[in-house]
Image 1 (tube, rainbow, N blue to C red):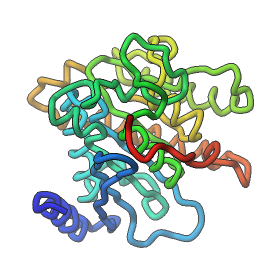
Image 2: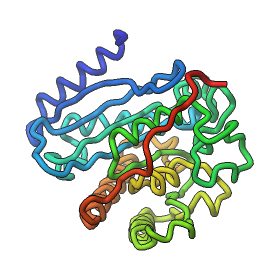
Image 3: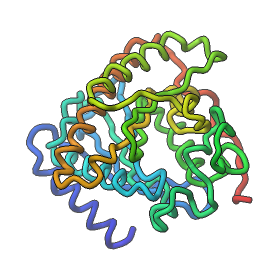
Length: 290
């Protein structure tokens, strides 16, 4: 691990130690599945995890590398959580694990590009509704190292819920309706109803789906339908992009995420015992990218 990463980890460990309410164990790893892509991952969990069901959540930014505020927001949120000052601390911390991925598209962030270094929109590279897009979605679903890394992470961690942070338009994007998945109609209806309800509290925000927007292959569709995580995309408003009081604005999103993760815990508890969390296992993939 480089010197900068060591400093970041040291900071997290210090603030976690001095936090008085709910002590957190902090770890830093890199998600790597194929190729040379390494995605920074910060995990926050109680150091007194109870036995029984654990709820795991992913908060991700930077999938579009030119949306720099999303990376800053996820970094800010992770630091607040580590210090015990985030409203996310209201989650039942003894049974919650939070993963933060501030930079899901490292090459795109480095070059300030919407795409990765192969010209692929990673938020169109997931298999659900893949190809329904005007942008290049890659040669095939999961053709990219970054999306493959995320897939391996989901299959390993079996997340209860996930949010993919983007910008900059006043939208919350929920999973698209898929008629062929009738076995999850009730759960889909419950989740999207809650998303719409909470979105209405954001003022001038609109609720959308990838299918409605013509954006197939999106993260939230795959995470919900294929990995059975209660997932959504949160778009940061352009109005908040240039405000001086960014942290006050970001706190609105922080509370929105808290509400949705709380709903996800409740819906997860409603699932029948033995519910299969993911569909299938990680298949064999090429040892290198084409």
